[in-house]
Image (cartoon, rainbow over all chains, first blue to last red; front, side, top):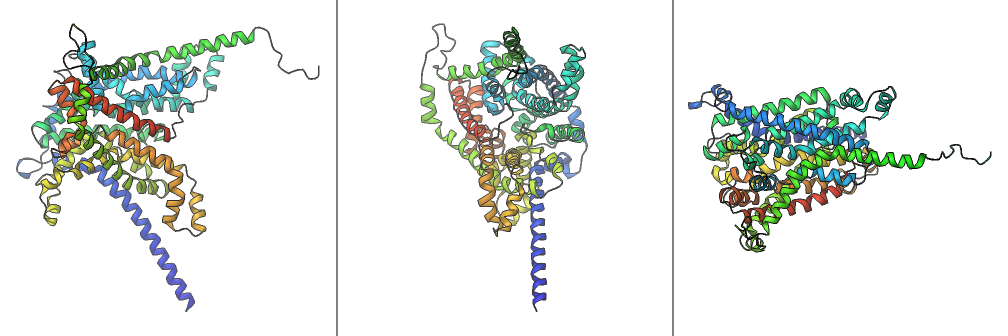
Length: 275
Length: 298
């Protein structure tokens, strides 16, 4: 009698554990599905043709009619990433390797844009561009706005990478007679490569998909692709072609993320808001 | 010879080291200079500018007689635009609650039970591409004739009752901020030793007791920091209320600010709303950063 009872209890326990495991995996996949479902829906919609047929023509619209917007997006992303990197490399190096007072405060001050709502950045920049800098008709205003907004995303992975790098390599290089410039470009820069790419990847996906600050500060002749999507959704309603553009944007961004994960893993994203 | 220190003080070294230290500090600051200049010019000066402008009487900002100081904008904010602030806070708070409800179990399972974490991480970046795509996608799903129509027919409710409503806006907002919440809670959870849970289980605690008595107190800092961060970010919500909300949800501060500042060019009111939004975001972020680990810079 007793062993049978024991066996039954064990089987109940095993069943319960199996169910628990199943439920937890189900929860993970459910939440993931909800996260991806807007994208999936847009992908389905982007293949909808007139009369319910599937149509690949919507994607021809992306290269044709809105190709210019896509081109602007890419150009602005590259310009602001270049400026970002040029400013962030010496800044990160100074923060990690050089002693000076007020380091914590300076870092927080530089990381602030992450926490300012986009609409506030937008209105403050458009007013100063208008009244002080006279940059409203120049692309550089938009580029600089993007640069400032994504600067912390570039800086933080660089700091993480530099902190992980022991200073012995630089000391060895210096002992062997390398100048400080040579040490940086031949030793430090290659070794913090993953951090640099993490910063580039994060900033790229933010700048490339930015529509809010762009809506405020874009010059009249420049419309980036996300802004075009925003305008189209607001004025023309939902169109499969707009969905095709949105899907293209997300796929490009996702490809950047996947490439980064494949090559470097997630270690260098520590401290940034991407896990 | 006994009692002599091993390293003899050599005259002249100490002052030289001090000078070198100072020079290194100056070099460091010089390397930071471009970053400081750019953020002063394009972040801090504009923010100071809108604070100034919010205290200035409309249309006197550039007048030759000089700007006239006033509190009128803040008066208008209090008398007419308090509901807008209320809606903004309500939406952000609800989105944060939804995130907490789904994010804590998700982060726990992800950290403790899942081996395919990198796949999950890769797919979790989709919401970060922007609230615009989420709002667009959700709008298509919920529109009459969209993929969710059979579901609505099943429960016999009209599509627009859900599409233009508070829940759909909150839902979209919480999808957008879900990864940030999971990131914060997950980091806090992965710092908790799993043996503590095992010990609690050995001592006869039920799973929910382990969760409430052991895990929650140990991860409270991460959870509070994550919630505050998500709340701060949600305050600036823009596309979701616009595409998914009814007139009531479209009153959010960010959108009103855009209408006032860019469409109606009422700079005084727009900047006042910006300052209010900024103040809320800063207070929330300050507490969030105080709670979080934030030990990147030592």
